[in-house]
Length: 366
Image (cartoon, rainbow, N blue to C red):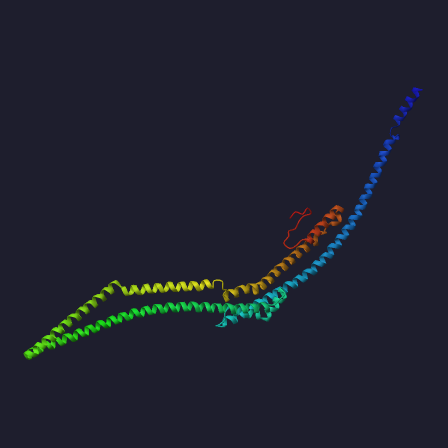
């Protein structure tokens, strides 16, 4: 019996591949099933890839048309901005020439003319949402107040200057009057000395031809005249000496210089008080500068910034159209994952804002 079983087993072994264990058969069936599933998945993904590819190509084509339409609108907007900026520049140039031709024109009057201009106000309403009518009235009122303050300040400083001039002139006049009076007094003494000397000469000449009685009287007259002459000469000598000492020491000049310096100090103190009182006053010129910044310069800046922003948007559209025009080249050869990566890149490029750089599928800048 055993021998027969051994022979049977040997026959089975000799038969080789014609025999499979149940576990082997099950594994083989599972491998075949998985292969069929994978094949089915590949076919499904292939169909999905075709669908995604067609959808992406349609999406890109539609988006390109939208971008081209938007580019046309931006071109019109840029042209309009350019025309408006040129219009404003030309109008400001005309108003500036008129202001310069006016001899009585000021910076504030020139700005007031600009704020009143219809062309400028139309542009202000267009780009700022309001014209300059209200702000022009406010500016005019502040300028009137500032001019009044400036006039009062100038009047106060002029009064200080007038008081200074009056003080200096009065001191100078007193000095000149004193010199003139001294000179006149000296001249009177000189004439009186001359007259007294002449009278003495006559008295002395008469002495030779008069009587004894008359001689005694003449001698008394001569004596009195000699005393008077002596006194006059002493006065004259003292006056000349005083004058010479005054010239040498320059007392008069010193007194006048001291008085002038004092007048200068008083004027400086008075001016400082005026300047302190008016230190917070804003001049009409400063108001013109401030309101020009709030109005004309602001309007020009808005138009310029809008031009830059519109130009940036147009440049971005050009970059996006260039990207989309080649984004789907060769997409038919990609698998589903590849098509999805291209779509992600397309959507990221479309979502890009002006100033942002191009990024890859991982969000890194290129």
